[in-house]
Length: 182
Picture 1: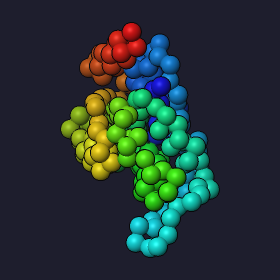
Picture 2: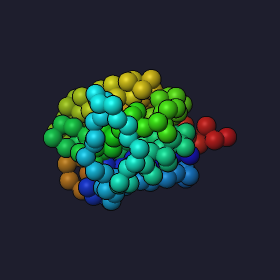
Picture 3: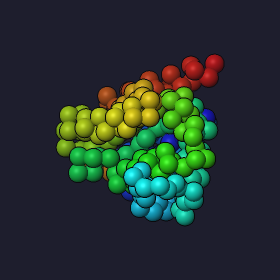
Picture 4: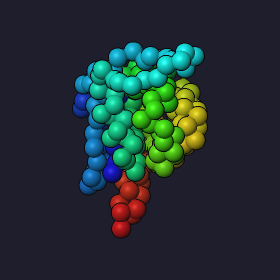
C-alpha cells in the first residue's frame, strides 16, 4: 500500500497535483495532515517516563504508515522548509520511540520505501535541498532511507503543469510503481 502524508494548505494546489500525477492508476491512501489534530510533542527522553497515550490523531496515522510499503511525504516549500504540519508529524516520532507499544518502530520504518515530493517557487531545485536533507537525516536516525525525491517549480496555482521536468518525473515514478505491481 502507498500512503501519502500530505502537508499542503491547498487540497488542490500544486503539490497535490504533482503527487496525484505520480499516483494515477495506483491504489493509495491519502492522509491530509492539515485536517488532523496533532498536539505538541512531549519530550520524555530525559525523564523516567514513557508515552502511553496520544490525545490526538497521531497514533491512527502512524499505525497506517507502519502498514505501508511506500510512503510519500508531499509538501509545499514554505519559507525554505517542509510545511509545519508535516514537520509536526515527523517530530512525533520522538514520542513513538518512547512508547513501549512501538518497540519495533525503527525496524518497521526500515522496511518502508520513502519518497519526498516538494513544490516551491523560489529556485526550489536548489533552495529546497535542505528539506531533502532534513527528511534524509530524520529517516537515517531510524535506520531507514529516502529512496527518491522530486522537486517541482510553481509560484501560482496551476503552475506545476508547466514544469515539464517535474511532470515527466511524476510519470516515470508512476511507471515504476506500475512495474513493481506486475
